Structure formats: C-alpha cells, structure tokens
Image (cartoon, helix red, strand yellow):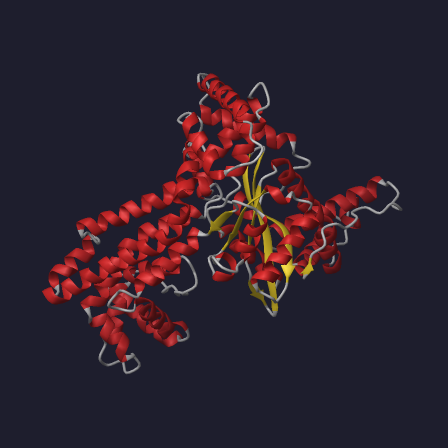
Amino acid sequence: MKSFNINRQLITSTMKPNKEIEETAAAEGVFVYHGGKHGHSYLSQQCITNVLKTIFSSSSAISKSMSCGRTKCNSIAVNVLAPYFTQKVLTEVKQAYFYSIMFDASNKGNTKFFPVCVQYFSKIGVKKGCIIDLIDDADESATNIFENLMTVIKKSGLPFDGLTSIGADNTNVNMGNNHSVYTLFNNEIENLFKGNCYCHILHNGVKWGHQQLTVDIEKFLVMTYAHFSHSAKRVEELKSYHEFYEQDFHVLLKHIKIRWLSLYSSIERLLLVYKPVKSYFSDQLNKEIPKELENHFQSEETLCVLSFLHHVLFEIQKTNLELQKECITAIDSYRIITSLQYKLKQRLNTGFFGIHCRQMLDRIPSDTSIELQASFVRFISTFLEYADKYFSQNVAILEAIGHFGNGIENLTWSRIQKCIELTKIEGLNEDNLFNEFTELKLTFEIIKKKQVPLFDQIQFFLSNEQEKDTNTSLPMTIRQNEMDEEEQEDQTNVIRSYQLWAMLFAVNATPTPNMKKLICFLYSIPASNAYVECVFSDMKHIY
C-alpha cells in the first residue's frame, strides 16, 4: 500500500524568525491554497505569480519576494497544507469519538486510487467527505482493502471502537454477506452498521426495471446521440429542422450507463427537441439514417415508453439528488426512501403513468396499450423490489433513528429507548441520559420562546462558532461554498436538525455527555457514498 504521508514536519527547527520571510511564506501559502481550492494547475499558479510580481513590483515587497513555481506549489500543497488540514480533521473526529469510514476506487491514468473519507458530528453539525488519506493500490480484493483501511485508521490515531459504519458502493467486494470489506470489519466490531449507498441502489434499481420494458431506451438514446456526436454536417442538417419548427437548437445529452443521473437528463433533452429530431430521422431522402433509429422515431410505442420513463424517473432523480445533499445522513434515509416508495406504489395502484403517456396509450391499438401498461407495472415493481432488498435489511433501525431528524421538539423518551435498544451503543448511562434529555427539552422551550426566530438564533450561533475558529477552522470545500441547494434552503429558513442539536449542546447550562454521544453516533452514519465519488471530480485538474 502506498499512501500520502500526513505526518511530515511543517517547520524546521533551524528557521530563524523574520517578519518579511514569514509574511512572504504566508502569502505563498494562501496563494497555493486558493489555487488548489479552485482547481488551478501548478503551471497556472506559476504564471500568475510572475504576473503579480510585475504588477506590484513598485508597491509591494512581498509580491517581489514571492516565488511559486510548479515544484514549490506542489511542495507547499503536499508537505504543508495537506498535513495541517488533515490533522485538523482528525482532531475533530477524535473529539466526536464516533465516525464512519467511506471509500471508493477509481483509475486515474494507470493508477488505482482509494480516497478514504470520514463523516462525523462536529460542534457545528455534520461534516462529511473529509479526506484523511488517499491510497494508491492496484489490488481491489476485500482482504487488501480491509488491511489498507485498518492501516489508515491506526496511522490516523482514530479510536477503532468509535467506528460506526463502513460506507461504499454496493458491490459484493465491499458489502457482500460472505467475504467482503464489511464482513471483515464486522468480525472485529460488533453491530457495525452497513452504510449502503442508496444513490447506487436507486440507479441499479432503474437498470433492473429497464429490462422489463418493451423498448431498449438506453440503446436508443446512445445510438441517437452517437449519430450526431462526431458529425458537424449532421448537426447542421438537424439545425435546419429546428428552424422549421421555430425551436432553439439544443444539443442532445450523452447517456452513460454507469452515471447515476444521466438517463433522466438524456430523456428530458430528447423530448424537448423530439419534433425536429423525429423529422430528421423520418426524412426518406437521407440515406445515412440507420434503419433501427428510423423505426424507433416512427413508432408511437417508443415515444410512449420515453414519456413513461420521463414521468417516473423524475421522482427517482429527485430522490437521488436529495440523498447527495451535504445535509443528508442516515437519519433522513427512512423519510426519503419511504416517500419514494409511497409515490411509486400510488402509480401502481392507480395505473397513472403521466398525462402524456396516458394520451398516447389511448391512441395506440388496445393490445399494444395493454402490453405497454403491463411493462410499466413490471418496471415499477422490479424497481421497488430491488430497492426494498437493501432497505428492508436496516428498516427497523432507520425508522428508529429517523425521529431524531425532526429535532428535539417531537422526540420522546420511548423513541430514544427504542433507538438505544437497536443501536446497542456502549457506555451510555440511561439514568443520566434521561436527565440530559429533559434538560435539553427545557433549553429548547426557553430558546423557542425568545422573540428572535429559531432559525436566526441557529445562524447566529453558527456564525459565532465559525468566527471563533477563523484562524484554525477547516476550509469549506468548493461544493459547500458555491450557491447550491443547501444555501437555497438557508434562504427559505429551513432548520437542519443537526445544527439545532449542535446549538442545544453549546447553550445548555450543563454538559450532556450521554446525549451528545448518542447524537454523535447517529449522525456519523452516511446515507450515500456520493461525497466520496465527488473526490474524483475534484481531482481531475491534477491529471
């Protein structure tokens, strides 16, 4: 196993304090951090440094002293920034005690990388996707992955008995019931939670359901995209059909079978431009059109299946995106998955597959209509069966911990007892836990009665905590900084349960160690492996 070393000495003992040197070093550190955060290459940073030295040559002594070439940028990032921020993460994890390990594997060039991330409950709420190591190893066997992860845990100094869950995609190597990474860890830690990735589960459920349809839509989408993807002449011909229908030209989106979200997006884009694209493939004078595509576009059956998938996949896509949110943990899984199950079962019970689909079913021959409706029922049933195969394994515990996602107001002692019974957290004093729960309930009632809205109180608390740690706090990732769905929730005053719990622990008059231990355990369990998958996107500028 090769691993990036995080235990390197940051400052040598031979350095003599010098204000100008320290200011220059600080400027170079900030410069490299900013470049890494926004995905700038080291070559780009070297070029920008030269520009800055020219612009500020007469006004700044620091800019004249800066020298951030490619080698130095790499050295600062690898030997200074990475060890420092990794150590900050590990310190927070140790304070939280409970944590989950999440990992994934992907090839970058001829190298196989395994990013190892943690999820834990910090003093301001849940943190996930924090990388503690990046393993380079071509061996993907369960035993080897297990040994590598054990090495990372020991090297990082994390408490092994604080590990609550192993999160990964749902392959047999990772999550199988016989010999897998999960079973090897479960042999060492009793009651280890299996962190199945529900984003993968929903995606695979759609793949299994797709086999029940009368038309191979995935093949149809791939062929349609491929027909235009490498031919400027064909694209220009297609544009003329858009002009005829007075529609703006939109490029067809490529469907990639292993991508979670590409199927719905590809269907949505094709339906948006279906009339001009259909006319293009129906042109009898065009000899380049594949016969199979011509038959598909002339068939009402293909369009009907497209409309059905567009209608059903909308709900599945929305659920998948929700599971990928930064604020979602296993506490939210029961609510999210049962909501999707209910919506799809309603479609089975009522036979409603979308208004456009129904209109087409009324137009086509009755025998074809009956066959299509039967295939739609099989699609939804197969999807639900596949998802439930994984969901049913943990449904009891997910339902029990789901009550904590509603905050403390509707939480009862009986629900806490049920949760303790299922999670089997060691070291909890139930007498003290009851007293602490009662105290936190009272604290919540007091702060709720204040004239300041609860949402504003939470935001004020978070800003204060972040201000205290201005010099030492962990950096926000690019995904967290940009305007995303989480920030849109802030604008609508949505209160996140983990932020409320964090504030209650901070403002309560006396410490509540047992209640905090319970919350740290529950919020450390992931709902998906999406944030580890995103690591490879963040790494792409390196290669």
